[in-house]
Length: 216
Image (cartoon, helix red, strand yellow):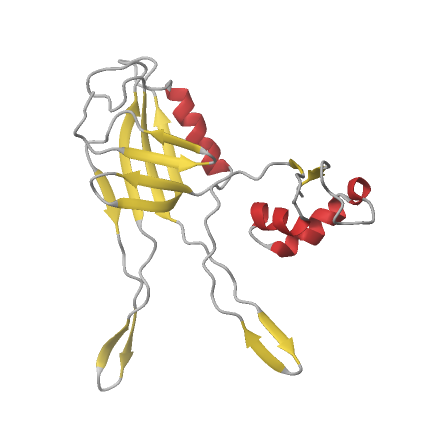
């Protein structure tokens, strides 16, 4: 097991995985997003914009059994890694990517993931994966009151890397406001949760303790 090598970790949906075999190399792609136009008498001018989202890609393999080149003492079965990555991709869950000794810690989406099995090493899987930087966006709200428009400030929302459950059993101190904020990141969803559970909650939206609620 290599003790001095860099490590690559994926974290999402309450799970943290270290890839068992480091790639020979990985690619970090940073691109500008500038516009250019021509001004008569001046020539080409450039308008500098924010850069495009960073992309990180690499290729490696999931070994069927441990060998000295592994970064972990007991690698998991290849299908475990494949299933986890495919699930995050299909469920559109952003992951947190860590690459130690390179100071890379970023929230990313999985843009491409392909894998194959070669005949010479039955049970092990080669794979290639591409990530794209994830930027959480919260739309500004404009509140119109007495013909005056107030624009709320931009807010950075915490990236949710957890899969939303289908149901939730309310505990002491829970409110629809708290549940909406926790699982949707937006307290305005409290009315949708109430509408979906009127038969369970009854006429009092605050009477939810101990009740199993459907999360629409």
